[in-house]
Length: 315
Image (tube, rainbow, N blue to C red):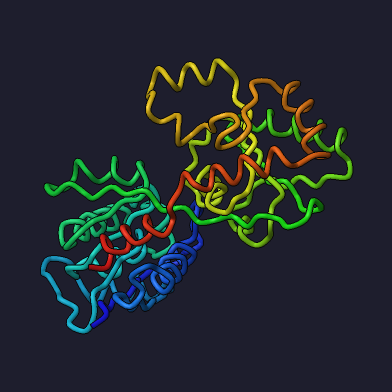
């Protein structure tokens, strides 16, 4: 018999890297397509701001409530506020307290009331899973049970079948670096389209390649190296030697996930001059890009990673 789970989320119009609805839909889709699809039945329950406020007023904190018909998975702060008394599972993609002031204003409540309600939700939770370092660091000191920290599995970007498709630029550096380089690229390669990363549209079209500026520290889906690797999209990365040395000193083991291995999982350049010269050849002969993309695809196993996360969330 399949385990039934209802993902509760609320898109409240607050500035967030990824909308809860997008995360919920992604989880539901991969539950349907996973290696253990027959074991999961995932439903969704979207909430409005009115729903959240009404739930807070109707269900005060202070005692547990059990949901008898299904397991609830509360996704981020909006759902936590609505279902704080429930002994549910909580999935956090960011610090839930970071938006407390904005939530209080939106819901016409006191900010401290919102913070206390969020804390109550953490205390009532049957299980807490975080998929962002900011979420884990924010809540770990507040609860006795250590949250289960996970990495959001790769979501494959779409690889282009033709050379007429755009190159996606993911900026991990200063905005001025992006603008200067974008101007140079458009001037040098007028026939090639370059698009700056937008989490809302990154998965809507195929990409000829992904150009990462700086060390790929972003946790946004589509902006990570493994999203490109999973989709066999070639990765080009521009990282200065100074940044590489500094990252190696801080955390040597992180480089494999944040910086490509030149010639194996992507093409790495340390200066804009080197990058421009290489692009001049690569846009004419894309064979080296395709070769490293095929090699990088063997580095990731999205199906296994999704299966592991789904079991942690839904079983």
